[in-house]
Image (cartoon, rainbow, N blue to C red; front, side, top):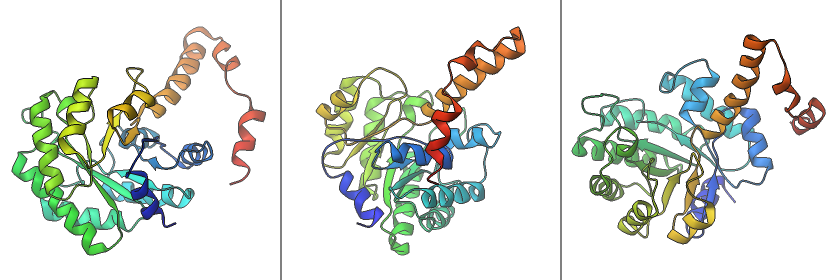
Length: 268
């Protein structure tokens, strides 16, 4: 089955986890663990390039999408931030370029990056989603479009406003809806009910829930954002700080051995 068709099928029923690798190695290992789809992480990729989140160019991101898509056989969803542009026409151009990288899906978010007004005006946000929809349709790639509302992670945790925005993005052509930062069962259930029957993605970066609970609520897709990259960096920083500050190496003794890790990569 074509990866785009497979990705769409995953969203039709049940619940699946779409973990977020940040490079070829992490992507291949997650695919080998049996995950049926993967999603990129803007934060994890930026950190791998020595940058802060949101600190990479659209050209670098497009190259990263091509690299990850070519490295695995499972569908890949792109964390495409805000489309790397503000104006709808520019978002459309960047989405068209992303759709040609081999990805099976991408998301467009409504955060502006401005502290005084962290979310785009609703009318502009809707036009940006509509522009992404039209670009995908023109490209004919079948890329699945996710609309994201960022209020809960940019200091605007208003559930009613989030639902209003997600509903508007669905009407503009988003096929999956996503509000990172939702933490309670009631919040998640409210979003799932408001946009049904369209699928909802929930971000899980801690231990506040599990797959079974989210599946019971009706969530279709679960991602972890930059959490796996954070977990990896936690190990690196713990070991390196011990060496730098104490001159000891006990953290390294807890690491997996070369003999355990290296065979994972011998198959390519």
